Amino acid sequence: MVYYKKDRLYLNRLQLEKLVKKYGSPVYVYDLDGILQRLEEFQVAFENNVHVHYALKANSNPVILKAFKKAGIGIDTVSWGEVLLALKAGFKPNEIIFSGVGKSTEEIKAAVKRGLYQINIESPQELERVGKTAKKYKKIARVAFRINPDVNPQTHPYITTGFRENKFGMDTSFLPELKNILKKYPRNLELQGLTLHIGSQLLEHKSICEAIEKTIHIYKNFLNEGYPMKTFDVGGGIGIPYDGGVATSLKEYGSAVMKLLKPLGCTILSEPGRILVGPFGVLLTEVEYIKRSPSQNFAIVNTGMHHLIRPALYGAQHRIWPLKRRHEAEKYSYDVVGPICESSDFLGKHIEVHGLAQGDLLAILDAGAYGYSMANFYNARKLPKEIVIANGKAAVSPVSSVFKYSLP
Ligand SMILES: Cc1ncc(COP(=O)(O)O)c(C=O)c1O
Image 1 (tube, protein in one colour):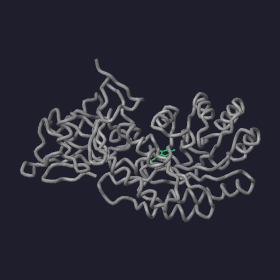
Image 2 (image 1 turned 180 degrees about the horizontal axis):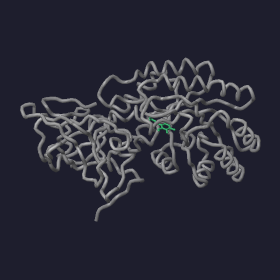
Image 3 (image 1 turned 30 degrees about the vertical axis):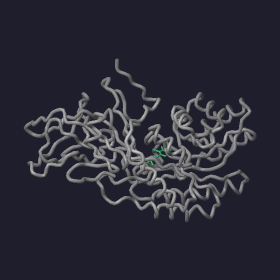
Image 4 (image 1 turned 120 degrees about the horizontal axis):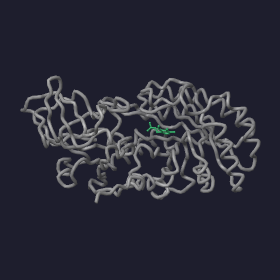
């Protein structure tokens, strides 16, 4: 986590201003030591009775992925491209869950042939496609049904997934059709569990527990009917306080989930993303221009919605702090905006900073999740570098292979 020492901003004992001097800006900086510590806290909250499958979509930095592999956890993916990133980082096919609502024929063929640990099924048609493919290649596909429990996760409407109106998961009325498809492919489909994921950035775990409670009887029914059930996947979704407030108690979350699922004797799977990486990344940027309009001051910086889309997409409010504090100068309110030709290209509105000037450096906090992984090349702009601090030392990370970009 970041902190000030003698008015200079630090992350994991390193002065961020010095990192910008060395590596330039804009730049993402991740604290890998913090990430691994958070992973341990997560596992301890479940008394180590949880199989963590990190949701790679939150941050697919290759150094972080390799560290997670070394820590012995699995991976959750939502596209074949993500599966490839996981394989490249050293994960074995039987450590990979394949989620996602729109898997193509090609993706399913690849997943079935590589024998992934679990394919999370989102519709009867998808199950049929998996069954047909597995039969064709004489394989057994291990599947879990994603249930839509119809609960209100109390988060931004763009990141709820467990409401009946959402495209994700399956209503219980789908179960007879799903069972018929299982019967059609008895040698090629193995129903091994159920899975849930009701939304992201959830600041309390009550709704996740409600979803589990609503789903347990389905698991028991399958078990009683002789299906080889063994996994209950509770998804991800635990949020972080972007305002720097008090985080969700992981211990309370872990205990509540365990209390519900321990009696089933199943393997508890979890797919955390944001909670593991979000607070341990910052996006550093330089002020290109200060523009004082009659109604608003703008700090135009060298990063924007193409590098961090969360403010534009979800109205997310990240804290934005100067790398060097100047208490003595007058404080003004700024809209911190990027260079992209869109009015939604802002990183923060009404950000109060003392004496901000051209050339000053700013840190956008809690940018470790859904930052770089959602970045894009809009306006034909390049992506920022990524720096990883491990064991207190910073190094430039190799570029994730899905994001190769070169300038002449
Ligand atoms: C299926 C699935 N699992 C896990 C996650 C990770 O969610 P979070 O980063 O909120 O923990 C997501 C994200 O939306 C998801 O769609």
